[in-house]
Image (cartoon, rainbow, N blue to C red; front, side, top):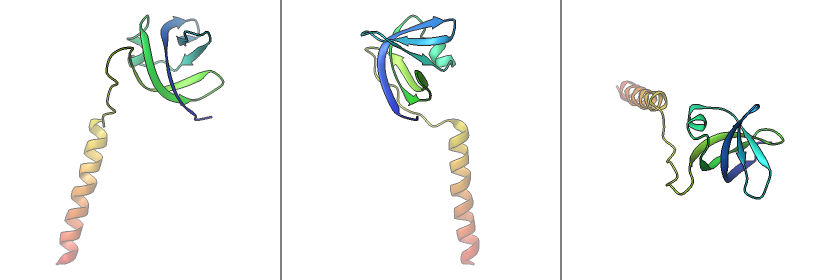
Length: 97
């Protein structure tokens, strides 16, 4: 499926896990995470990818009416990129001599 989705609605907890109830009816099943669980009971906007008939793999979620969170690179990713760049520079210098 992997279709991008951006929806706004009420995030509720159900027997099947977190669900986004849409204002016009219908709902999306959301994969649980800490970011999702802390917003249960709030009106939210979320971005993610469709991962099933009515399932969304949430990538960003925030309270409706607040600023959209920026996508931040984690510490592991920063370390990996830094190591790659440093090793490339070292190899370039060593290869020069």
